[in-house]
Image (cartoon, rainbow, N blue to C red; front, side):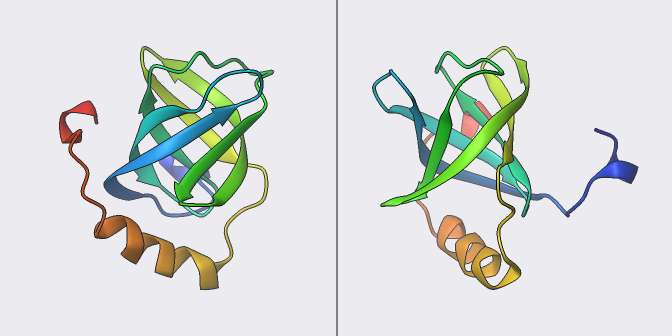
Length: 106
């Protein structure tokens, strides 16, 4: 997707997340950037366009997502329901305070 066709502004972050894919054990993921409509992650998880994906950015909050693209260990996910502005800004603040030890991933 080109910059001109993006639906919302991306914010670069380095934060830990948990990827839940139906039929598989939860896996660690590093969040590289996020917008109200999606995100880029770095993960060893096996994903396909048919995967039932939920991403946990904040403990206990699972966001349904779909795979848009994959290149190596990086993947672009689109959120099934965009984040509301009232939820998005507090999430960015919470992610900014995350102790992300895998900053080399992104």
